[in-house]
Amino acid sequence: MKTKRIYSLLYLLMISLAGFAQASGFYDFKVKTIDGKEFDFASLKGKKVMIVNTASKCGNTPQYKDLENLYNQYGRELVIIGFPANDFGNQEPGTNAEIRKFCTDNYDVTFPMMAKISVKGDDMSPVYKWLTSKAENGVMDSRVTWNFQKYLIDENGKLLKMIVPKEKPNSEEIITWLASK
Image (tube, rainbow, N blue to C red; front, side, top):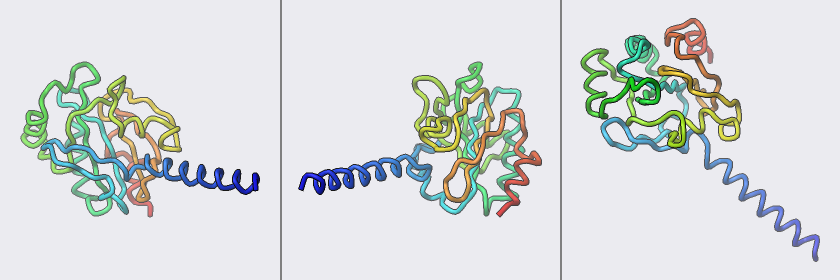
């Protein structure tokens, strides 16, 4: 009788832990767009995703053009998601409306842009906590080192790798990833 009760408790514990692990997957996130609407990551199932922290006043800001070109070329298979952040050198001081206008006026950005967040520190966005913590993403620990750092996620919501900020969105490594099935 005692053994049966222990097995029952273990079974319930395993089910609870399995549910907890599934609750922190990539497709469980919901964030706000730059226009204040809800964006559900579950809508990204079956697509490759590149997440990029962006800034309007950075030496890497011209990467917006490369990101937009990549999005136009691979938009059926790839979703690029920009997350403006002001964590490095006060290079994204604007409001969401100002950032949207800058991206549209200067780079004709059409890929999804999210509301301004923090990608490091105590107020780090939950999405970036997931991206940077092996305990959460199951793949690797990383640290966001500057604006335009890229994270690649496969069609099943699995984090594959991090690409350093200086590497351009149209690099051979990224194009090879996009061409792989």
